[in-house]
Length: 112
Length: 109
Image (cartoon, rainbow over the protein chains, first blue to last red):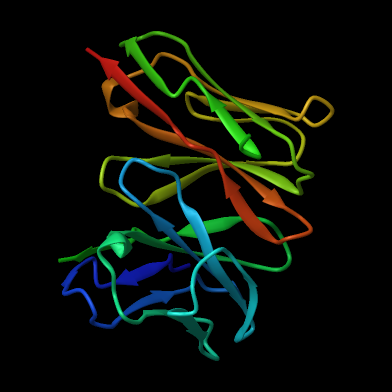
């Protein structure tokens, strides 16, 4: 079975720009969760998508948005980038039949 | 107070030592995860527990549901075990992971 793949692995953007991060879910998983991990801190929950619909959201502004596709892959979009958006963005896929999570390796976003 | 707390925050050990990392949580959970993250890297899931004890190689994880406490043990530690170890509670009602702040482990040769 395939794992979770995130792309790109690294990205540098300028303040004010927009970015799209991508995540493929593990085969058999129908749920994708996105997390932001600032340097030296634990991951913070951004939102979760279940069967193409948002299924919970953390304390992040509306400029963080997402999508899930019929194949359960997902995108995280961030508009109007701010310097504080610089972080490691992690996605994890899971199934509604158990609580196991598979994490991707993350996308390192740097906003300058 | 964080819903999921770990101790210690930092741990330095000599190769071969037995290591214990603790996790306490204050929320109702469906499962508890132990995760490993190497510097600058992604997260690897080590264990998922809802009761009792699990063992994988030199790693052992235990959970006491009544006391809302879990431990991760590493036997015969090795420098390649150096990483951040994170416990994360799966909140059944919210269907999301609540992460602890992590324990930075350094195993010296």
